[in-house]
Every structure is written in structure tokens, then in C-alpha cells.
Length: 282
Image (tube, rainbow, N blue to C red; front, side, top):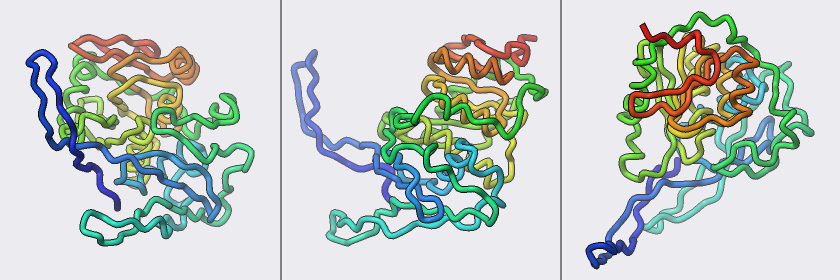
């Protein structure tokens, strides 16, 4: 498994004080992960190494390929590139992961797969069309009975932040966390890609047999994009909350699905863009 952080020498300049110095800095590691299904390359995503099994399972849930752990017979690392560390010791990068589907589970259609490169900034880059992203959800969230207090939602960014351990060192990672209606953190994951962080959370829920994730809130550290809304929907999560703004398409998808979408959760304030009945102020 690759490292989550690395040290790098930087020239640090303080313009106001008129000083400069050379010091070590901690960087978030970004490495490619090639995802294969039944031996066939499906996509490459740039991610922070760690929780790769969760990431791949969550990705396949989001794509509508699998619904439970019974749909996967085996997930294993393939032989990746061999690199040398600082001491000259050679090690496998473990940047290729192959998933063997269970008998009877259909592999992704070739025409609907992602391009072989997906950047960490945009999880949907390379999709043939937006229409292909509108996958039919396995679980419906419209009738989910979740009710969550606005005060709980307002406190989620701080609860998420307390578990961003790698962010404390680098300042360069997104985070996603799955919370109960009372604000209890079920799982928090970090990654250079916001979509990867969500995939890791969804993959954890799948492996813990917690899908569909009814009655929960998915809190993300960045904006609420269409893709993150789609991933929450595919996991049966009835509420998505984000520190920053949602996109217009994310709001449209949430409204169509009966999902609650909350944005600009910061400083004790929040905006409810879809599904307002679930957010209480009593």
C-alpha cells in the first residue's frame, strides 16, 4: 500500500516580514488506481492510497454494477509498477485492483464505461454523456423517514473536521462522512478526490452491510456536485450536506429523487435546496 503523505523541501517566503527559509512540508500523496472488472480495464482514478477496496466497491455501487457484497466474488490487487523508496528498497505500488464479479452479475457495458483517465478534480470527466450518469437507483429515498435538526446539520462540518487526520498534516484532502440523524459519525474517509472520498464511504457501508443507508446524512467537505448527489442516491442516502455550494444539476437530481440537499453548511448557517421537510428547527 502506498503512503498517504510524503515530505518535500520547500522555500517558504513571508513577504510581509521580508524573510524566507527552507523547510520540510508534508504533501498529500496522489497516485493512479486502475480499476479492472473481470480482468478488463474499466477506469483509472487519481486517489490517495488507502481504503482502496472500499473505494472500488463504492465506485461499482455508484455505477449500478453491484448492489451487495454477494455480487463480488473476489477483489484483489494485481501486480503494479515496482518503485524504489528512499532507501533503495523496491516495493509494489499496488495501483491496480481487479474485481471478479459473482456468476450472473453483468459486467459494465463497454459503451457505458468511463474513459481510462479520471482526474481527482472531476470524477465524471470522460463520461460519454450526462444521460449515462442518470442511472436508475437501486433504492428509493423519497419515502425515507429521516428527520434531522438544523442544529445537528450545522455541527457536522466540525465533527467531520475532527476526524480529518491527514488534512491536519497536509491541508490538501477532501473528506466525506456518513452520520446518523443525531450527528454520530459512522465513518469518515479522506482523499485528494471528493468523489473518491464518497466512494470510500459508500464502499464501507456496502462491506458493513449497511446499504441502503437509510436514515443517514452524507456530509462532504467541498461542494455538492451532480456526481456526489448521484452517488448518495445510488447508496440510498436520503440527505446530502456540503460545506460549499451545490450545482444546479445536483439540486435538480435531488428534487427529482426526493432527496434532501443542504449547502453552505458553515458558521451555524445552512441553505436547504431540496427536501426541506426533513430539516427541523424545533
